[in-house]
Image: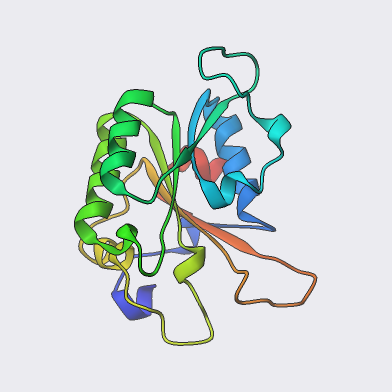
Amino acid sequence: LRAYWNIPLSAKNILIAPHLNHFIQNTIQLLECKKILLDSKLLKDFPTSWFSGDVNFYDDLPVAIECLENSEITAKIIKTFRPCLVVYRATENGPSNNLDSLRRIIQTTAENKSNLIIDITDIWDFSSTPKNHAIFSFLNENKLPNHASIICNLEYNEVYPDLNLSFLISENQKILDS
């Protein structure tokens, strides 16, 4: 990231875990989230027992609804649902690769005091020259906002067949200290 896009990055802003779900689970618990907007691909990775199915009833389990790729609709859902956490997946050819759409998600989450995690798993590959993407252009021009973090599961970059690694990049000290 530093070499290709001149993104200011230091080791103190990076955490490593076996899988990105660990970062999401830790963030949900750390922030005591009751409402979560979660990308459909990631939502499938969590057991159904981990979330409540009733949006109107809050017990000890958080309520999770599916986050859509369309940034306009997602922004409207954020304004209406007011989630504590939004997990948005960056895709190579989807709306997330549009700088204006990405800015809209970042701005809407900030305005609604939601934390944002952007998953770059689908666009990150160590085996070749990194692809240009709106998130990298954004980070080249702007510092990562305090309410936003980036996660990546290195599923396309296996170190060993039985070992998964993920990383999180954040400026939020509360998340980094957890």
